[in-house]
Length: 305
Image (cartoon, rainbow, N blue to C red; front, side, top):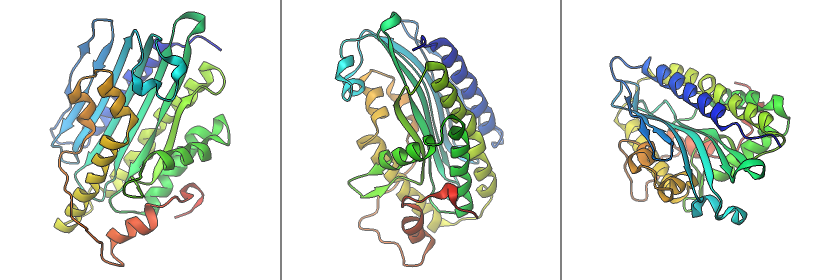
């Protein structure tokens, strides 16, 4: 296996962070990201960027981090006990978009590289993907999202999209609710299938595809009129997002166990949510349709609008 080029992937993620932030700011009349640069004692870097109170995005967090340590946390080694006690480097970009308009879906992307150990004996793997969490479902949006995801990974192997889609459906699932968080997308973990350069090319293709997958949906929905009823449903569904992040998400647990800055780890949370006791949606409503048609595994990429 080739030597992991951490620095090159780091520079790619920093450029991707800047590009996504520029695009988000282009939607806003004056709201800008709060940008911080926090340099660690071991040469690491945390570069969180958070936008709050925008016209289109109530909150958007696009956070870069590069960390290292003498040993991996228990969250990182829970499924890899052979790595206990090894030094590590971890470089990642994690983003979350919480739109104001309930017809614009929330989205999340994470791209990361872990290297455990040093020198020729170093072990490396990538992880990440992107997923979509609509509050109101539209076939054209779901089809576009999944077709763009397929296009990003299919050149690297025809089995990647169905495998990564199925993994996404499994991961972004709330077992205590018995329901998915959203309509999925791509998810991969412990990914080191082949040589390093080939894996990095696939991961960067996913990162490059994000804007093409998400922002056309924003353009299509951001001016759609809504009322208090739609806003209330958005708040309830945002509660599901919080439940997943706090109860299920390995990335949140890893960040907290690794001693990452809490404000950065929890920047992915929506700015406001609500929980409703024993809420039931009206049969035939658009809210009920989300559960019946969209929050079920579906082969969106092979459908037509």
